[in-house]
Image (cartoon, rainbow, N blue to C red):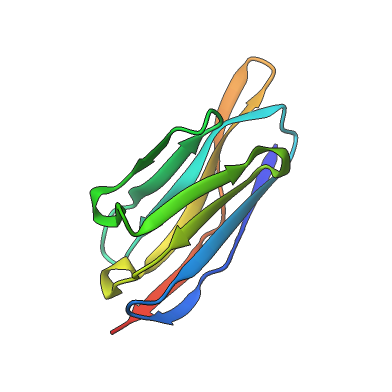
Length: 119
C-alpha cells in the first residue's frame, strides 16, 4: 500500500502563484508516473498535468504556459508550480501516482488540497 499526502493549497488573488507538493510513501518499488487532477464544484475531475519517471510531461490546454509539473524521483515527490492563476483554476487538486510493486502497477490518490483564486 502507498499513501500520498498533498500540501501547498490555499487562497490567492488572480495573477498570483502557488506551489503544490505531493509525497508518496509506503510500499513503493518504483513510480511510473505522477501528476495532478482537479475538480471544481459541479464539474468532472480533469487532468491538469502529468510527468513520467523518464521526465515526459503533459498538460491540459487550459494550463499550458502557466503551470509546470516536476518530480523528484529520489523523494517520490511531485510538484505543481502554478503561475498567473485565474479564478477558473479554483478547484480541489488531487495528486496521483502510478506505483509499481513487483509486476503490479496501481494508481493511488491523495486526499486533495483546495486551491481558491479570488478575482
